[in-house]
Length: 288
Ligand code: PLP
Image (cartoon, rainbow, N blue to C red; front, side, top):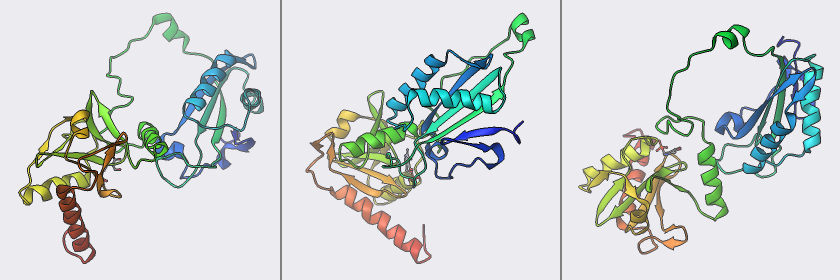
């Protein structure tokens, strides 16, 4: 089937083997997109209006701007089924924010990627329907696995976009009232000379975070890996972020309120210096 299958790709039908999307597509990099599966029965879309409602609602929620109208999309779905001779089957529709250099925040002026594939589907197996099936139970982890550096970054993308819209560098992520990390960096606060950061428990174990914790401790600065309430971040003496591209970044404001003196603090500056030294040592072939 696949070899003769025609794929709808951004307004054109192309053979399956020739259909390509960019390696920088945000669906690939960030799971930044939505999909829909529509049943085709007797060559017609089954409950197609409800599927269109959900699809267009999802695109609106993610602020993905479609150049196509609802009618255009409906027609493309049905045409994908017709072009593949699918009378009884499904049309899979995927929309992503499009291809752009990899930055979390939404790119500007980028055309979304719209792909549709049709395949024959006779319905679930009749013996399963007759006899019934068994299931297991599993935790709902759709937004979990934060300790794995997965490409399932849509929540991070949305948080970063909100930060950008507020003219901010980053978004601190809050779970159960506590700061876990930030959208693409690790988060620290300093209170009365002690540094606090969330333990490695459903957050990304940042490489830079680990280096800084050890480096501070070597300098005799106390570091506690403990979850801290967002209020304690707001009223902290200092707040800073760390990451491979963030390095050690002082935070001087949270939600438009000043942190500490509103200037990078001494403990943060020490971390910046420890980081800089390690980077320089690595550059010249030393530590790192
Ligand atoms: N936390 C999140 C969610 C990140 O995406 C990143 C880096 O991309 C970090 C923390 C910082 O990790 P590292 O220091 O390994 O770059």
